[in-house]
Image (tube, rainbow, N blue to C red; front, side, top):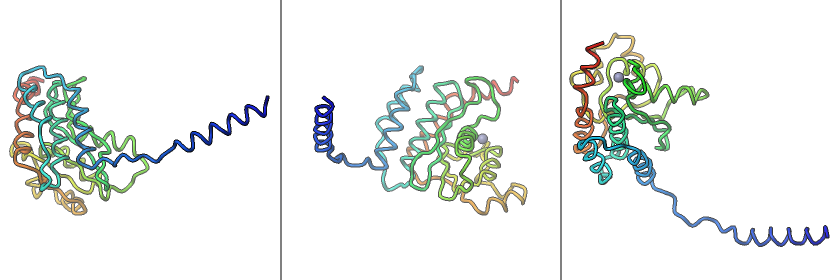
Length: 229
Ligand SMILES: [Zn+2]
């Protein structure tokens, strides 16, 4: 009886081995991988207003412009920004990618929801997640952080301290943004930032406009909430 079981098992293993063909599916391109991530995020967005519904459709239909190397990443930050608006937070999205271009962490502003946390800007959310879950990584060479909107002073200091190699934003924020005038920081921060690159992402103008308009969707209402505290 034991011999019979052994024979059956041996036959099964040979048969299964013969069927174990290597996968012939081509590996997804960087564009496809990012699009898939973004479409998954978009599917979770509740189009609770006509504006959110319109931007959801626009982002779903957007085709990457391959002449702009940061287009797909900025698109993903816009998707996350819309998700933030839908949740009642400020419309800013952020991702951190590694040197292979893979998205390591993604997040968005969480100042108002699930509960008020004045420090939960998109960049802080992403860096908190990264530092909590990658404690063994001590050098962020090759890492790039993308935000849909230019960083504020609090986030810029955090990003300089974090050592993230490159920080790129889509839409400038002339009112609250500090990256375009980093020269106004105290000298010690300017010197520390010399090991890093800060600037505007290379993406289509349509995406810059989208990042800006998604941010403007609810910002007046949220600023009013801040002022009333
Ligand atoms: Zn900030």
